[in-house]
Length: 169
Ligand SMILES: CC(C)(COP(=O)(O)OP(=O)(O)OC[C@H]1O[C@@H](n2cnc3c(N)ncnc32)[C@H](O)[C@@H]1OP(=O)(O)O)[C@@H](O)C(=O)NCCC(=O)NCCS
Figure 1: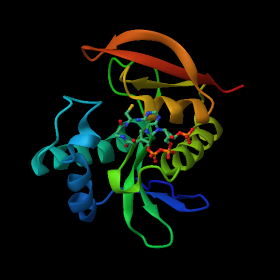
Figure 2: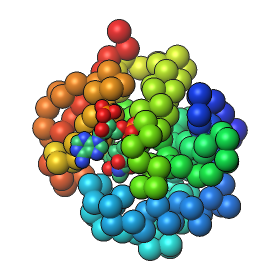
Figure 3: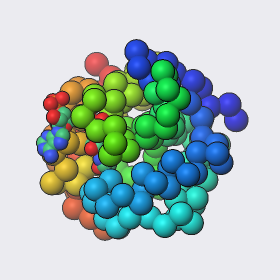
């Protein structure tokens, strides 16, 4: 399927391709990046390939998913931001992951706002959630800046997680 392209002031949210693997694997291999989700450990290139193809496949089975994000000016790969709903999840999630070399520029917030707007305009949703490691303060800042607030703490996929959420209204 065609993954929609969204442009913000500095970023382009676009589809996923096999040519992104080098950049995607470099991001996932960073211990700083991996610290607060999944196993908490950096991914091998093979694991990154599996995640890349899973994220692409998510669009096929749900008609929404993560975009890969690039800087408009340089076309450099910045990270992945979008909407997903894995089996057993407590709700439809808006999520973000930015390569450490681009942290602190407001890119996660900029891309997440665009994803949020696309989701509420395109999907029949009442609310969105974010599943956040209790110590991931940077991620909580992004959640709050895009309009989410703390809802509850739940065990998600075997891990205690803080759930942030926002409603369409
Ligand atoms: C969370 C993440 C996406 C933020 O990316 P980013 O592009 O740097 O985010 P932004 O610049 O838009 O905003 C980051 C906010 O967190 C704040 N912040 C950054 N590090 C922080 C820390 N250690 N403690 C508290 N706040 C922190 C920044 O000051 C900023 O808030 P502010 O603008 O209100 O000052 C990035 O750190 C990341 O990819 N981390 C690894 C993957 C991850 O944990 N993803 C989230 C899974 S739930």
